[in-house]
Length: 200
Ligand SMILES: [Zn+2]
Ligand SMILES: [Zn+2]
Image: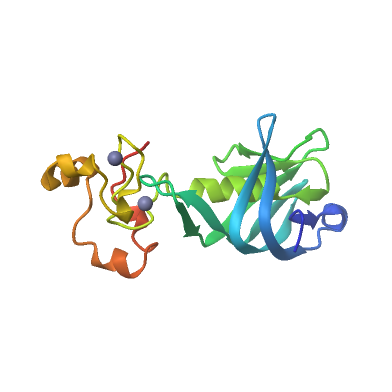
């Protein structure tokens, strides 16, 4: 298990060879502004990257990353595993004055990862790419009943006393439960992006 996803680009900067790195991560530590953040994965997440020199301290990185994020169900707050299959592709530019690698926009409009240490730490890049690809909110099941607004009881485990006072049709409308998503029931993740989930 790698502690940090690093790729050594020193020789590539000198001789324009290719560089490769691969491994598994159970979490990523990264900086968000001045705050240290940790992104945890449900199981070891495989990554593989290849970097080719483009000359002038510029490179192109491509690869794959398959993390399984742990998110909260938007209605009942239980953990939901969200597997992602990410294709990586970004320009890199070496600038010795850069402290922590960060994503910028190149003149061409393309994404460019600026870095100052030839021993490039990809933590921030992989974390940001994962978070950008993740759905804004997820449901643990398409028909999740959520929590009682009064007592916080998990209504998936049965009704509470407050629930009994409200007509059933009204509850369905309120929660906006999507009907007839058969494929979503077979695979809880396949249709997550299609679901119309109210944003919290
Ligand atoms: Zn739920
Ligand atoms: Zn209740």
